[in-house]
Image (cartoon, rainbow, N blue to C red; front, side, top):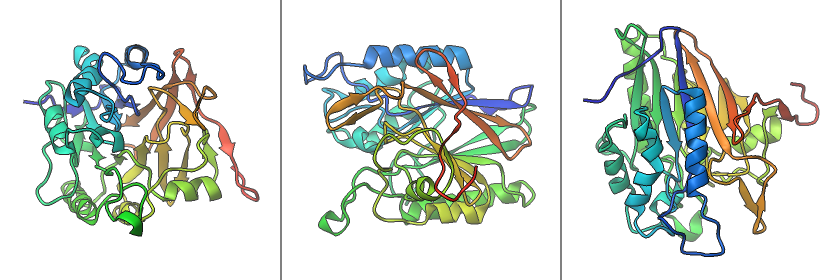
Length: 326
């Protein structure tokens, strides 16, 4: 029986998001590429010990499956530090998780076996692997006060030369989200529950956000590596009125957030390495993790970055399109 999640007595609920930890085996196939697993694990431990989260979220690319001898063992090593601390956790999958011989369905089945994992089995008839909801009860534990949606954003477009690029959240997933959102709203007396959504690949609107709105944080990658197809996920969330923020990984050099149509679109902070630009490692942004704090009964959240050295960064406006004011 999985331990139910609930707000603390002070009304807070803290989430730590680890992005793109990309664990391997005990050694890396490529001797020219540094093996970061040990320092990544140490960073994760420091962040968890400092923040004492109620939930840890792995925001995709948990393993570098195309370079790992045994992706399932690499996954076990990636979540080892969280399991050892008895902290509830859940993972969504990224493009690198399924580049090896282990399919995403099998990876999702593995996470369900862990004692402190709070993910759920996939709903029938829904595309992808790892679509589920985690509900957070009030500190008295008597009713649901917040919902966390986890969605599989896929890996690579399957339409070949017609589309190319990265995959997108499919219509069946959007329909599933809308249905579950309506259920939770009805159970809450017709009022949408405060909710967050986690997936790996950013929505196309992340580029619009940077191009036309004030953003907090950095975009060191040249663009947001979103899919070439806009399947309407943001539109659905706007319509349902429950999701306050979305959280992604994928682009190691990006950690910005901003608000679009009443929803805060957020990147995490890469936890393994920051970015490679033209084959050269970038150290402009230290590795770290995004932290999110919900407050019971409030439709808002706080978020900040905790960096490798333990420092806390409350992001300032980094990008203001010309003609706009913060």
